[in-house]
Amino acid sequence: ATEIPATTTEISAVAESAGQLGIATDDVLSFTRTMIDLGNSTNLTADEAASAFAKFANITGTAAEDYGRLGSTVVALGNNFATTEADIVAMSTRLASAGTLAGLSESEIMALATAMSSVGIEAEAGGTAMTQTLSAIESAAAKGGDSLQQFADVAGGSATEVVQLWSTSPITAIQKFIAGLGQLDEKGESAVLVLDEMGLSGVRQSNMLKALGLAADQMTGAVNTANTAWQQNTALTNEANKRYATAQSRLTMMQNAYNNLKVAIGDAYTP
Image (cartoon, rainbow, N blue to C red; front, top):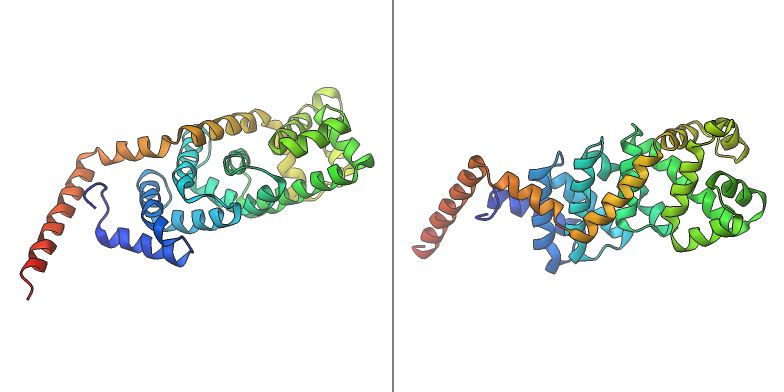
């Protein structure tokens, strides 16, 4: 409480929720610090961040020492794209299961969520639509045949290349497919008809893929930003430090120190 502008009561509340959400006892302190930093630096509250990140980490198997990397990735993406940290986290949670099964890393799932939310796709609809799309690519890569060739034609490669990419770098396969969709009109083809032929014709799914195709550069940029932020692991700390350097934050920390002193004196003279 003397290092960050949050009271001991607020810190304890986040720690309590971390325990309820299944965060290991040894990891509660680092998790709590990360969530409070997010609450002070983004449009997420600490409690919202704790709930969403715990669920995301449980699905993806994120290691405890990487909680800060998750926070830094979200902050970097929120700072650089036309979306908010709350929207990114909401979409990431929806995509976590399908993305993990497809072989995407945590930062790649968040990058995909950023690209989707930055073009106005909502978490509930987008999560379902992207899950269906990832399942369709997985099925095509496994079964081969015409469906695989259709994906390959859109992605601008051979069926063999798509299968290899899907097994080694699924996010690259998704990027090539999305970019290919965005270039269909330039080639005189209709994205709507192509998606219909591929069986990706659900309204939500089709709208999502067309929107992503028209903003394919957003996805590429989001993937690069997310991977860099994950590696550097500094964006959240830098953002939080800016907030903690304000006069208001310093006064709050001073008040916390004073309260701690009162508690210490009270403990020393009890009864």
